[in-house]
Image (cartoon, rainbow, N blue to C red; front, side, top):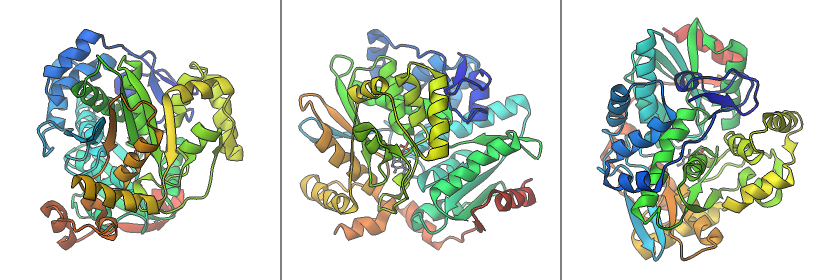
Length: 462
Ligand SMILES: *Cc1c(COP(=O)(O)O)cnc(C)c1O
């Protein structure tokens, strides 16, 4: 399987090289040259498979440069640290509405599902190539801790995680800063998540993808392997509620568009999906694009769903690539314009194509709080603020009540303890999170400039 850039000017790569590269050198994102299909029979067979086995059967279709045995082993190993055997337990919350728990991993957020795999995958590839690497990532909360948990045992790399200073929850920060390993480096940036992300992106452009002679790898959701790993739970959960014999819809709390785009890949592989609902907080560029063709940058607003506080959604470019029928020239022009003028206009035809499958809404903080307490009263379930946005969106956007709707629960509520208390619910903190409050933290605070970040990286890199 070959991988191509959405902007058409970067080299075509193998799976292995795509994973080790992350962002394409032309500023675009990598996608497989074609999307393999799963037949009805193959889908139904997944019903009898463990999560890891399903993951292997789905992912191998996109991976032809890792042998069967090591691929199977590293996938299996990636799903050993989850506290529920089914990895992604699903529960019914009303007639045709289901909640899919994606937070049973070591850091209690859906990002574990992809990043546990990424850690093992990259470790395997570096060992095989006798290479060392530097990992860089920006986090608005959950990516950082999930990445650190996924990579902390990898011998061949240093990992640098940038987070916006004072803009993530205490627990989120402590999940990153209390892990004491010499190869883990946390940097609090005096700026927003987008400033942090811009520094990471620029590092790739400036450094030619190498840092002190070592390969620089991005672990943000621009990395194809993350999307691929996430595709698995769309397929697995849909089958558990009746696919492929019936259509299924999904609602996804969305920010960088990585999670829901994995659902789109599942759709392109043949999973019968009726609706993909994008749930946003008031940082709603995705909703504005889908609903109003308003593809413009706006000021960041801090919300009580901070993992979704973003200004631009990088992975939307991947969807546009398909909506524009793989016209990389058009994508390049669109993003050149967006980069320069901070807005762009999507052509009617591709936009209509998107609107046939994607629906969206944007939810205010006040509504989030009332949903959290409502669901608790009605179902006895405590949901985190991101998941609450999803539940609201599912209700607003569902156009076919006869079709099962699966809302993705993206984080454990205890990660947003203060908000849950504010919603009037007394919440037990899991012990592993409680312990974090006692541990010593280690991180440095830097201004949001690429030079300061790089000199720090050079000074501590092994
Ligand atoms: C990262 C994250 C999201 C957004 O996912 P995207 O892939 O960026 O769209 C939603 N909820 C939580 C809790 C997250 O950590």
